[in-house]
Length: 313
Image (cartoon, rainbow, N blue to C red; front, top):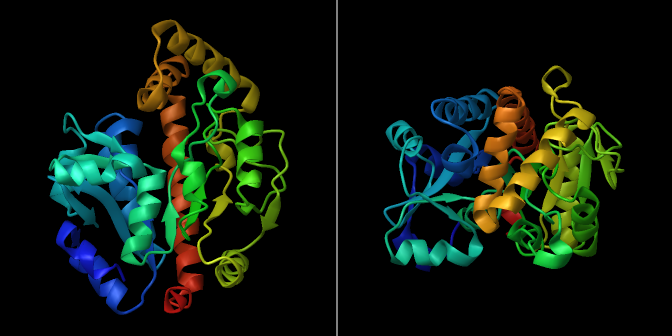
């Protein structure tokens, strides 16, 4: 459970609290997908769907956000609905999380912030769409997501559909290797690329079941108690956009961003909007399918783990 000093800043939903107290399976869920990743009403519908999928899988969902400066581990339905249309919600990573609390701001959590808060609450497994990484042109801009370094600090297993295809994928994979992050391909030898099942890059590790991943998590925790694990789960075949097709949309979106001078936290939402338009909405359908697929696998992993990892912390 979280350190006593943090309790004055944190509200834990009763369902999540009961699961923590009984050492039952829990899956953390982020909220930038609601505020910055999808349009309304698909964002709220997807968030509710993810929670339902986690429950159907035998685990308790813990959707994480900051509301009025309060860290919320688990959200009620009214708050989730409000987030779907709220204005001025900040996109929070590790660096600005404390400032959001002090200034009583509203914030949606990125992968890094969700990992951090999930761990502080005692949650081991987290499902998201895709992680951030090394942006294209980073050799000039040094634009590298804080998500990568979070894996070296925080022992949470993140289930995603691979790094976001908007990134420089070879450099992102290299950066993960440099940081010693175990990168698992679930039932695949090739690193998935978010909207596409393939990237042309080899997945460093492979596991073919949730129980195998759970066993790896236990051993990893014994060896390195501070390290996170990345599980890459390919988008369902029927929902994918082939790599060659999505690459055309990405190149055009990146060029638009460069012309407009868009960078930093604003870059990914800008690119997603451009790709949504260019794909005729197909990218949104693919995004929903892949994150639901990840929530399903995350619940299986959480159930396979039980409380055995948390007992060691």
